[in-house]
Image (tube, rainbow, N blue to C red; front, side, top):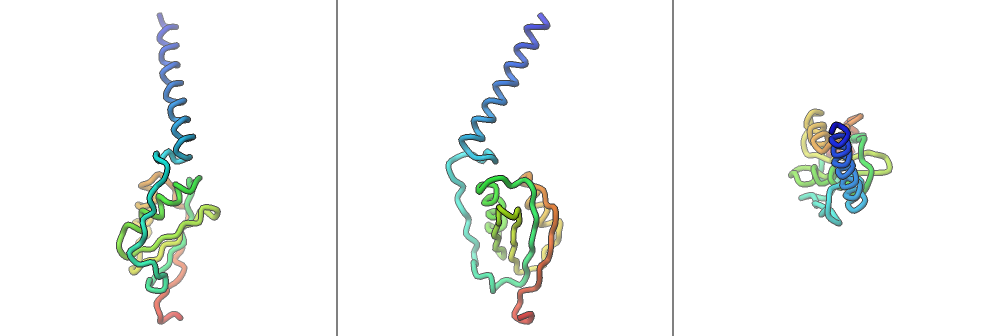
Length: 129
């Protein structure tokens, strides 16, 4: 009887593993589902109109969908422009306000990625040019 229970539990676990693997193959490494993730354009795409730039190093991005999810999380908010360089595992966040580190971390970590470094690159206002 115990042997039968072990076999059934093993079969159920194997079914979940196979289903998860099939989903990753079909939807990309992040398993976000569907063929594409719609890119969210920022309200203002003019980098020169933003006052601050943050360079954020992120672990856990493996594909274009991962990068787009992070980019969209910032671009959907007013006052932000985000660009993600998947090869460098880096996001560049342009902002009209000073961003507290916890706000950046909360946005990225909330999507199951890890922030390893945040650097305030510089103030981009016309006074610094």
